Amino acid sequence: MLHPFAKRLNSKYRIGYSGMSKVAAPMPQSSTRRRRPQSAPADLLDSVSVRAELAALATKHKGNEAELRAALASRLKRALQDGRALAEKLLLAEGAGRVCAERLSRQMDAIITLAFEVAAGALYRSDNPSSSERMAIVAVGGYGRGMLAPGSDIDLLFLLPYKQTAWGESVAEAVLYALWDMGLKVGHATRSIDECIRQARADITIRTTILEARHLVGDRKLFDELASRFDRDIVKGTAAEFVAAKLAERDERHRRGGQSR
Image: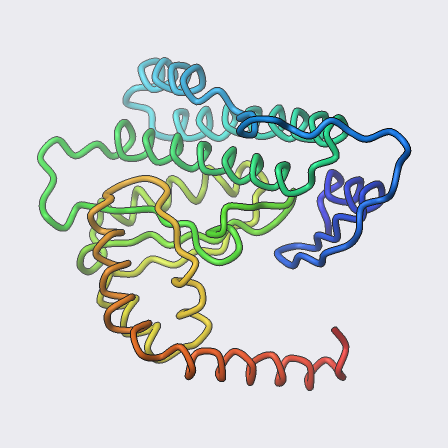
């Protein structure tokens, strides 16, 4: 089911979003040209002020995990709703669908970053972390491309250096529950770098997902190592094979759908 905001966009501007799928459609012609943004798209969320509010909430609810998690989800949900309202207002003024999708993606980047900061810095702070207590949160799939429609799934990879730890499990769970409590649909996986490479080699869908990976927050060196190994061990010399596999995947999808597109 489409988010109400997405329905309004489809109906008024024929943007053509349905979940994670995007179908190009021409914009309606108008005798009055809408003003296009002349500079970088405006942010929908003031990260500095929200971060300060969350720090105050962490102090207020120190020692009470359940209360802090509830307060985190509530504040971020309000930020999400306010940002979507502003995104719609700007879209109606500018008529720029792609810019709107980029704004919504950056807003989600900020929300996930703030949730991670509270989870790793307040809820499950590790003052002397071991080498295995590291994590990067990575946007993958369509979200990894830096564009997002209202109501789209949020596809995330929780990237670890080695196998899962109690700390990593707790942090990932806190981030996910905050997003779920906000009413978001989240697709997620938790993998080490070795697991990512092994599964990308065996599964074309996972390979495609990682191909569009984008670092959001957390240990940047982990993400850079994944990107380097993925390029070296998976991408290099396999372009023709990858394209052939994706075409076969498309053909099979059309066959199952009765050739409908």
